[in-house]
Image 1 (cartoon, helix red, strand yellow):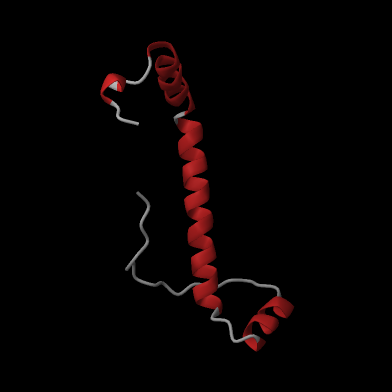
Image 2 (cartoon, helix red, strand yellow):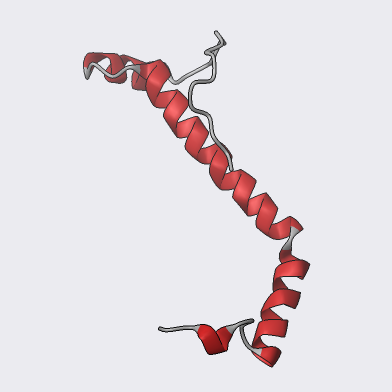
Length: 79
């Protein structure tokens, strides 16, 4: 699972649109925190997108097997 909690912060340089940055500051936004949160979300999204692509064949094979044979232990399901 991707967890970024409690990771140390690292200073970095970003090039941002000056008008957007000015507006964000005028609105009292914490730019570092906002960028950190949005970047973490995008990293997670891309990670799982890549994971799904890398495992596409295995997922398809599993789904085909379930479609053909049914779920294992299905007879014990109560729902």
